[in-house]
Amino acid sequence: MKKLLFKLIIIFLLIVLAIGSIFIGTGYSMYKTALKETSLEEKIAEIKGNDNYSKLDEIPKIYKDALIAVEDHRFYEHKGVDLISILRATIRNIRSKELVEGGSTITQQLAKNTYFTQNKEITRKIAEGFMARKFEKNMKKDEILELYINTCYYGDGYYSLKEASEGYFQKLPSQLNDYEATMIVGVPNAPSVYAPTVNFELASQRQKIVLTKMVEYGYLTEDEKNEILSQKNNYQVYFNK
Image 1 (tube, rainbow, N blue to C red):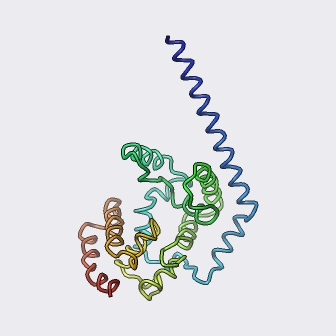
Image 2: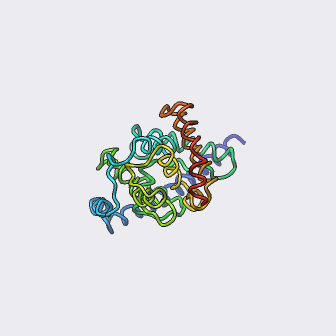
Image 3: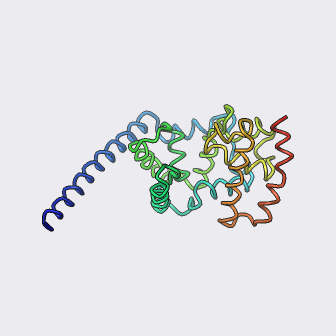
């Protein structure tokens, strides 16, 4: 009986390994095809050539801190793919019995935004991982962060932070105050839901999550968080007028 069980376990592991190898091979092929169509250098030049491109020093520090806190708090530590975050997300998804957390790093999201579709496919996620490593090997962390900020979709037809800040608040990114910056940073997670012009209450709930993460990772104090949230009524009137 024990020998039979051992054989079955070995067969199961071999099947899993074979299927995994197929997915990895397909993902790698997808990654190589994407690079063949548009090299990394060409893609970077294309993004930076956009008239609405914002450099990192033109973006408020609180925006950058909020982004890292809510999307990828180990951004400056990993090499493009964060196995710790993936494991944490997997455990949370199993416990919740649904996909509530993705585990993708900012670099992986940049790869998705620039080279791949938004479809949640295993092979696409694998290709995304290979591309994230490519970005990390060829660029500095702050360069990756800058590209990511300039390739997110912010809702309402805004495909850059500059477009979003001008569209939502009639300001350049450098002019955003703490409330405005921490609201916009939460929108790309689900633009059709969190755009303040679509549903201000949901946008505010997302902003609260962003600020809570900032407190958790030491970017803000609880008092500073509450001070930012206290401005809600002013913007509620602004967006509901």
